[in-house]
Image (cartoon, rainbow, N blue to C red; front, side):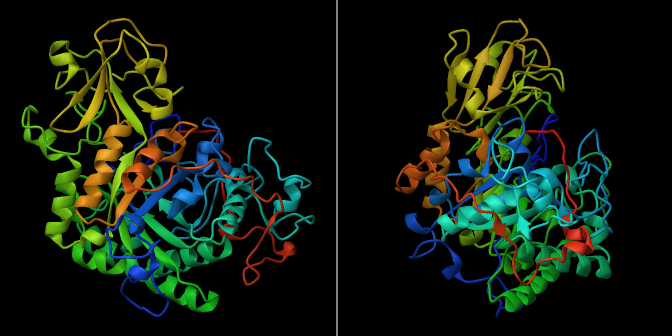
Length: 514
């Protein structure tokens, strides 16, 4: 999954997935099926997971708030992302700041909020405030601190009160915040620090579990990221440590914490984790079955194809599909009931594309981006596709083999939201392809689906309703207004206002959006 805004979003192949943590009584294995929403056998329509990511930065450019989450339709909301090391900037991203604008400076391995303003310091909705409260009342370092959790964290607490079946999970890492995973996972003391601080974070801010989004062990990820062949085994050790700490925290809190992880949707990268051992430690895994192709390549192809297309020009493109990823994980030992298929609520675009075959499987200059979100050429949320879908200069096509659509514009003019001139190719998912993938997950007896991310859908939940309809469930409803009272801190975790802002309260105030 990607973490921010203006640059990109790269959930890159990224695919990011999530694991839900188990009963406190289980010391080393994942929780049983009773933790799932609904009743019945795994894979039954009313029992399948519907996990969705909420991007921390969505409250900025996307104007997407906790109050907009269709909570009654979801089994879990993953909050993206927390950090675990002093702020560093990679290609202008990954910076995390405290409420006063200073960089996060926690010891490496310490899990901490990345955006104090959005996370806990006061930002909650379009009004930008909690009624009747000043920012100081939400700031533990202030003499006026009222023992409150404000921001999106506070709203999530209120959301769960209105939707008692909903789980909230804190996701740690992501595309721009994975730099130190290799270092932490290789050191037993740092693993312990990471695990204990992750469990304390979940308890303090009243999350129901932890999601590890390491992008990626052994290879891949953002430029400047360290890797080691030892990442493969160390990833397992890190998960085991987190599982142990969550179990211990759960005993203190009389609560079962979940553990999940975002795993690459690239079949070629599965060799970089110990699948069977990882599966034993997770409640479920969210496969990032998207970002298979984009402007980072040189041949147009689909962002998230369901099935292989034998007409694709090379084996790489043919192999980067949802089906290929699921088959590879199952063959490596991942139980089907623990796999959630990733669904993208966004598309990718390319520019200066050769004009044969309506733009499909055609060459283009690497990094030549087509139309995108404002300030983000090359990536476009589904809700921002409407002007192109309704424009006669753009033609809509569907690939019957891959079972996904694309848009094509053969003109050489330049779109104001593009990074290069046309012709343009946009690969995306629509309600039909989203429903088809959801039905595939059902037919294969998988655990469910995961979406990246909620802010990409339309205001009337077009894509979310496609999932729900495929599940045979009721359409999403506009959430009722949340209780405007300030969410109280967990009594066992409340801070003395004189102690200042602790490590768990370090966050950020960046202006970004996916």
